[in-house]
Length: 181
Image (cartoon, rainbow, N blue to C red):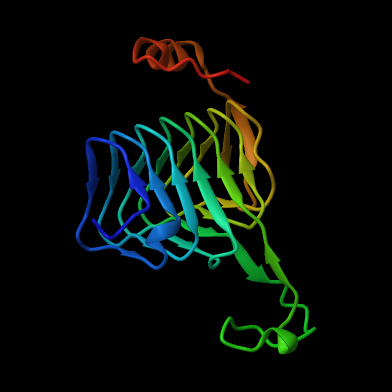
């Protein structure tokens, strides 16, 4: 199964994906990764996670994405763990030797438990999406997201709070005692 470092049980991975560094990928139990998935970074996926079709995670081997239990990333999302600043301090392209490149921001992205990332969302390097947050479709996330809050827009801005009582109750019923923030 793509020589992935570790996988739990009940894991579905579409045959139509590309993981550049499978030795840096850990997948929990009860997960699905749909067709068209592309990943160049280290990746740690918790349990009960769904990654929709045509999700792209870029940034290379020195960066990472962590996805907490019971989270989902919808179709077409772009998760960018590394990017040039594009301020004219050098050339912008990962194929250019480091000494000639513009300054590169390489920071992990963390998606905590119970998060939903809507269709076509773009996430910038270094962002943490707080527990239970929802990011609306077509949003651009360039700053940390507060827990249990719905965000929309470009850049993403808070819209309203999200309930957590039923969500956490059901997680406990499945045997997960996750610290709620």
